[in-house]
Image 1 (spheres, rainbow, N blue to C red):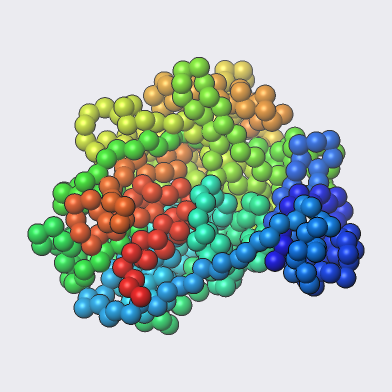
Image 2 (tube, helix red, strand yellow; image 1 turned 45 degrees about the vertical axis):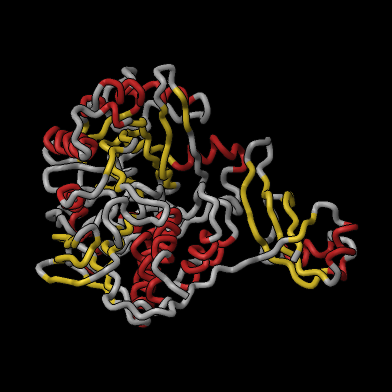
Length: 518
């Protein structure tokens, strides 16, 4: 197989016929057996946006081909193979949590023939979806069935971004698994792949069905209540009043399982504080973002809704950055505790909403948190969430960028807030310590110099965004086991070792591999 990078194609390219077109541009033409699009990205840095692509070619004579095509290079594909274990365990492994880390840990164990038991405090995806709809319509929050908890984890109600900064051969395995279970094949070659919350709901259900078909078990509405340790080794758990004996416990708990953090702390697991970030969601008209990034080509049929990723370093030494940008998406109420408000972003596969939104975050270090409690960051998050709830009577606090920066009255203009079930105009800067509020102000102004209109007065801020990452890390060894409790494997975002759907899924696979004996 030969790989050719840096193939520049115009916006009008018909990708249904690009293989034949590419074959005709290569010498000698009849040496190419097949062409496959490997990677596609939009480059909008110049005056005319275009596609930058990589292709994989099967050719008759690789050496001869490479002499005539200097841009080509040999490419060897090594597909990930889920291993079958040669050992039957006395007690079944238990996976706590059915987000990306838990799903892929359980899938890896099930394909190994190890019959995992998955416990998930929330509901199956169909029930969970109805509970979320009811909440968005003004119904009561269900603390174990919401945007944070339930089948698929928090990522299921998001944009479903699958791009990641990690370099691991298992990334491809995760993407291929998503395609196997219902995602579009374009995630295999798009530079910024995403599934969309509507498609993710189907995918996670199909992964669950596969785990069960292979001998695994998924128990919903089942919460981890206790962990039994003999000597320094795990021997079992209590989950919703039921005892389960196990020698292998995978803690894929998610970053919002605060009661589980307390349990783990009280059981003596080694933990530490870690950096995290807090801030707001910022909304613009998607058409304004498209125009700012694509110029006069903003409405081109081959260009999807524009996205961005911004970061600035302030003189104070703090960083402000955007995270989980949702083109054509919606700001959502992601609360998981009564009496608290949390925001997040979500979009569907078509990214066809009127607004664009992104988290706008300020880094918080462990030194910023008072006291010495390892859960200090958790308490800090909860305090701001409860302040936001009480400030607006349970509605989401919202303000215009113009008001936040002291330039206009606080009013709704062209950009309409999308959060449900309701919002109230409020000075969101009052929710945070001064160092966060001031950093957000400086960050918005600086980012306005990078993207025209980012600091527009009519852009909308919705607060608070508090759950972008865990403020806690459960310490583990190179073997991925807890440093002081044998047989326990903390993994994924909640354990402090991942930062998105794909990286969490990869972490789950790696943890499961540690107990598969072949």
